[in-house]
Every structure is written in structure tokens, then in C-alpha cells.
Length: 162
Image 1 (cartoon, rainbow, N blue to C red):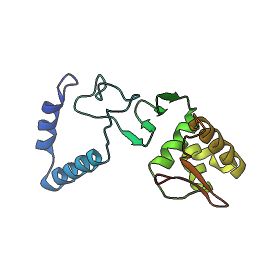
Image 2 (cartoon, helix red, strand yellow; image 1 turned 90 degrees about the horizontal axis):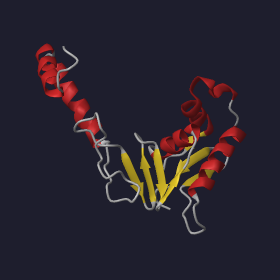
Image 3 (cartoon, rainbow, N blue to C red; image 1 turned 180 degrees about the vertical axis):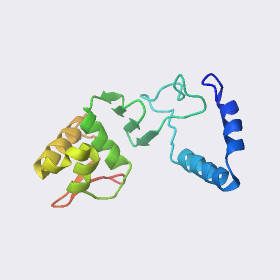
Image 4 (cartoon, rainbow, N blue to C red; image 1 turned 90 degrees about the vertical axis):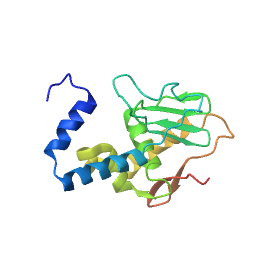
């Protein structure tokens, strides 16, 4: 395959190389990954063109829950019209919670997923401090709802029904 070929040319050559089972698995994978992508274009913080340069026919993973807008690929978070500046760990924590809505994530799960191999040295106090910073940053006004809920002694969850 030549690197200058377009996606259709590459796909045609790839399909020739795959057997029926592999084609079916590829189709299932593509349809499953497309189902998980949510496009939101009516939020003030959303990009006017949801297709970034260099990516053809791929929409961004955008999630909107009330006033909260979250875009994974652009690493952008807004509450109302206010863009929230999050550190890498804060963004990763929020993404982990949003992608597991209404599920309680234990301290150990959060540490392992956010810090990776370095999670062994992470204490519950470290996680509480991280979540406290994220909650504080998302609280742009007194009437902004609390998206992140602490489940005492267990962990945290993103409360989509609050």
C-alpha cells in the first residue's frame, strides 16, 4: 500500500486480503465504534465543523450533559459558555467518570486508570484532592449542579441524573 492512497483505495485492497470472518469482525468493530461516538454541535463550545482537518468522515467524541460539554479529541470541557482549564490528570479523571456514568468507580480503579503503572503509590487522599479540584473547576457558579459525587469509603461517580 502506498501512503498517498486515499481511504477508499486502502479499504479495497484490505478487503481483498481479509476472509469472510475477518470482514464481518471488521464491520462489527466499525459499527460498534461509530455507535459510541456522539456528536453535539449545538453547544456554544462545540466546534462549528465537527470534522477536524486530516480526518475524513470521522466525527468527534462529544458528550453533553445539561450545561456540561465534553470533547475527548480536543480535550475541551465547558460548563455553559465557560471553558474549563483542566490538567491532564483532571481531564483523564473526568473522562473516566463520564464514560462510566452512574457507575461507582473505586479508589483503586481510579488510581489504576488515571495514573497507570504509577498507581501503586497513589493514596485515597490524592484521589480526593484530584476530584476536589475537578469539582471546584466545574462549579462555575453557585447554581451549577455537582456532576461528581463522592461515595464515602468507596470512590466516585459521575451523576448524570442529578
